Length: 344
Image (tube, rainbow, N blue to C red; front, side, top):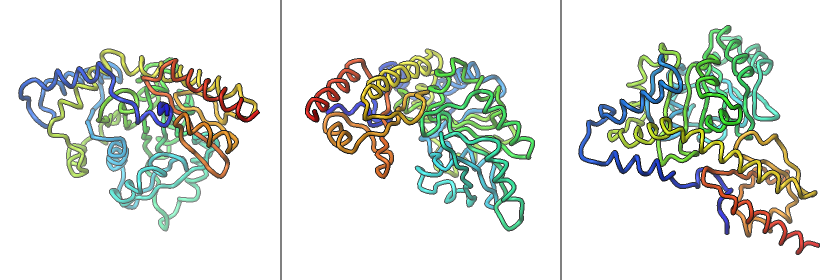
């Protein structure tokens, strides 16, 4: 079975990233970020995100999200997010467990929340009997593969800041969003008023490790302690840092994202050519969502791995990766043709 389209988490490590890890493995180096690799990687972050930032490495995306939000919340606070956001649906209540705070979800048809939706929730929360909203968290790209424009992010940031709140971005696939928008990483974060970013790389060619990037320096004051308290301080940090230095300095973040986005478009073309299939959302990143008849789903999954998104409505998700090839797309085309002939 071709397993390429189940998830970009299933992909391997980009050869250049693997090489950077091997090169960092020479001899001994200072621990906990005191090494040369960490220093050089922080310079790379400043080149892409701006000089006035603080960057902290963690092990994984959930750790990045939860600790980033911990930096701005107390236990009586709440964070507004999309109903389908990763922090709400895929992190096992980690935010609530670690912060004592509450998530307030905002409905969304396409994964993106809006100022009007946030405004409505703030009306309901204006009471000491309810958790006080302190932040909004958005995913870029969203869980449905859609992408916030620069204008949409700026609009949310302005509204959030005008109400004494902060804006967090879950950027597990931020590189794919920037590639789609044809803009820099800074243009859709610092320049749009984002306070804190969870910046991911493991879905785009890295082995392990994520980064918490603070644009609001006030929120970074105690993060050294929050990270250690949150079990996310790496002793051999050079092996995370070396990956990010390569990822940013060699523009792998963009090269890989452009490729996976392009493969998703090719995949969508193959799927949309079948009358029984219906694409659900614009293909703006490396994910393709579609509705398929159950018979097609069952037969296709015998040949090609992809995810069942919503069994009740026969919605499925296909995800392209940095190493998805034209041959993988050909295998999808071949499988569809075989099944179509069998059905007819």
